[in-house]
Amino acid sequence: MKNYFQPRHLRIVDEALIIAEETVSDRFGLTCSFWKRHPFDVKSLLGAMSWERVGNGYAQLFRYAKKVCEKRRGSDNPLVFYRIVLNDQRIISTTESEAVFRMKPLLVYILIHELLHIVRFTRFCCHFDHYDRLREEKTVHKLTCKMINHLPIPGIHEVASHFQASA
Ligand SMILES: [Zn+2]
Image (cartoon, rainbow, N blue to C red):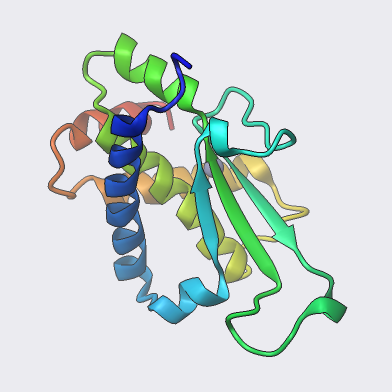
């Protein structure tokens, strides 16, 4: 089970998720009802389904859609559901091998990045099934770097400058 998130890591995921959700909600003026209409959850690799593979990235976003005929009225019965699957192994090995990387700021970057994808899909800035992935990654990446830079989290500048350099 080494290289999978342990309870102490999952507590950091929870903290990072609160920061990420609040930061993205503030930036776009999103309320609770937005997230009710566009629900998502976050899983570690151990909690993911066998087909939810993450490749070599830090995380992978999945989108599950119901058929329109299965839709009932109301925002508590949305058509689409998103899942963010974190790549425990990559995140742990990065924070262990690169001393400048702390897990919390790295997770804040990763989660803001994935939430921005969700916001942009729901706002039709791009279409989930056919979009220019490279271009969208660049856009989301730049936006994420801008948003995390002024967050008062120890180690956030190191993460931001690392990702800015790789843009
Ligand atoms: Zn991305």
